[in-house]
Image (tube, rainbow, N blue to C red; front, side, top):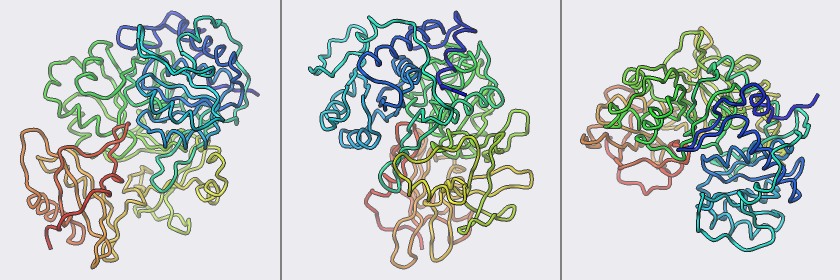
Length: 519
C-alpha cells in the first residue's frame, strides 16, 4: 500500500477546491490554485533531474514558495530537508553534505550564505532561488542556478503523485545539535501524515473555515506538522507570517479572523506584554497551543485571562513527528502539564537503567509508537543509543500524576548538580516568573570549584519596571530550599533566542561569568 504525505493537499483540493488554503499579506490561494502550483513545481524539479528519493533542502522563510516547494517535492517522492534560514555558510555546507542534498532552494534574502555553501558542495547539483515579485536583486550565474518563478512558468499544473511507501522517508529534520553536530531525524510519510491527521481530527479539531496562523517557522517540526500539514489536511486556511512581531501577529489575527494560534512560550510572553494589545480584535481565537519548551504556569494563566482563550500545552520532538502528548480538548487541562499520550503512543518515565519510576517520581521520558522516527540519517550508533530497548529516549525529565498526566521537570542535560543535589532549572524559573518585574527567565549551571556547579539565573525585565539582582536572589531564596536558589542573577535587555523563539541556554553558557552574589 502506497502513501505519499502530499495527499493531505491533493485530497483537500478535490473536496474544497474553491476554499482558501493560503494567505500571505495580500495574496490568497485557494486549494485548487495551491495544488496546481505545487504540481508545477513538482514538474519543474523533475525537468532538472530531481526524482524519487533525492534530497531537496528548503531554506525559505514563511512565504508561499515554502509551501509550494514542500508539497511539490513530496509529490515527486523527493525527501525534503528543511533548514533554518538563519544558518551561516559553514552550517549550511555541513547540512548539505550530511543530508546528501541534490538541490537547495532558498530566498533571495539568504542567497549569499546559501550560494557560498552550495559552491563548496559539488554533490549538490542545483541552487534554486525564490524572489519577491519585481525584484531587481541579481542572481548568481551558472547552468545549475535557477529562478524559482521562472522554473514554474512553463511547467504543467497537472502531475501524477509519485507513489511512496508509508515507511519511506519524507523529511529529514536536523536536531539542534546541543550535544554535538546536528543529526538528521528521518520522518516517514506515515509518521507525519498520521501525526497531522490525528492532530487535526482529535486534538485541534480543525474544520474548513478555521484559520491557523503560521508564525512558527515552517522549517521547524512544530510549524510544519502542527500548523501547515494539520490545517491543510483538514481543509483549513493557513495565514503566513514571515517572522514573529507582536504587533504584526495581532494585526493578522484581526485581519484574517484567525481562530487557531500556535506558538512557543516566548511568543506568548510577547503578546501578553504588548502595550498595544487592547487595540486589536482577537475575539475570533478559539484555541491556542503552546509547545517547543515548557510554558511557565504564570504566563499561561495570565494569557488565558487577558485574551479569554484556552491555551493547551503539548509535547513532542523532531524525532516524534512531533506530537507525543497533549492536553486533550475532551479532558480537563492541567496547567503546567504536557498532558496525556496521544492515541497509539506509549510514554513512561524511567531511571538510568530503564526501570519505570513510581508515580510522582522524576525520570527520563521514553516513547514508542507510530510517531517515532525511522532513525538518524547515516547514524546507526546514534540511532541505537536513542532507541535503547525499542523506546526512544528523549533526554527530558518528567513525573506522572495519579491520572496519567505528564509534567516536565527539565531537560536531562540541563539538570544542575550542586554539591551532590539535583536541581532542575525549570523549578527555579517558575519561581522567578512569579516576581512582578520578571519578563523572561533562564537558569543554568555554572562551574564552581567548591560545589561543582552553582545556580545562575539570567532575566529580562518588563518595560518600565526595575529590580536589582540581589532582590531577585532574595525573592527566590524565600520560596525554595537553600541549596536551590541562584547565587547570581544577571539582568539582560533580551535573552538569546533561536529562530523559533526558543530561549537558547547554550548561548548563555558562553557568556563571561561575574562574581557571584549571595552565600
